[in-house]
Image (cartoon, rainbow, N blue to C red; front, top):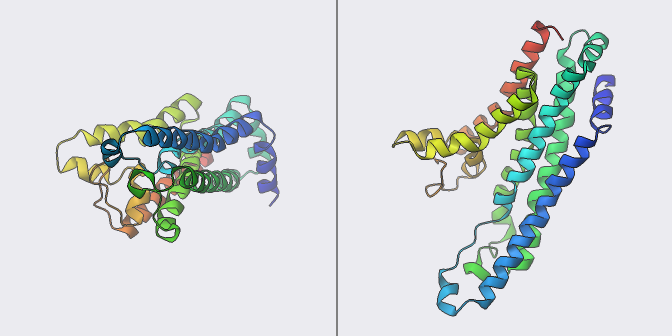
Length: 258
């Protein structure tokens, strides 16, 4: 508990934490701005254009912002301490070392969970209010039907946070860990989307961005992601993204010099 309290003190004592949280929560305003602009364009369009107009669920678009911000927060939670040399002090106080990383995981994961829930649900409710029944009723689906997707989408944010922390512990480089995070989240899925079948579908199904919808059993045929995983398998893959880098980092911090 003392280790957990010390990690919470570290996280709330640096400005980067508040900057990442503000940017994450600010994505709600981004979603509302897009919804407001889209609604205005819809209202001013002729009837035949309205029938063809389409709008995706904006909470699944703006979630990219908190995913990346919380991932960066996870990276900095380890690499900044390594760069300043404070990691040696932490490991001196906690000689077994791995409890330090576990405490960081708990704090970063909880912050990611809160940021994800506020961002996804806040964007959904505000955009639903702004868009109304426009765009063929994209926001008229009953809330309980959308709830599973909203929950799994919000859970992707703490997964990114833990993925960033694990990458930081493994690489000990802020630039390298952030580049790895961006590559896994956004670059590799685009590469997979351009591969020939069946590899495009197979590898796309394993990408983290497509897992939330696969967990709920939704179809991803018209995206860069695949939909070949069963809900339980998609949930297992998402758990691997969150835990495997942390476990690898915990193993390495015990073996390497601080």
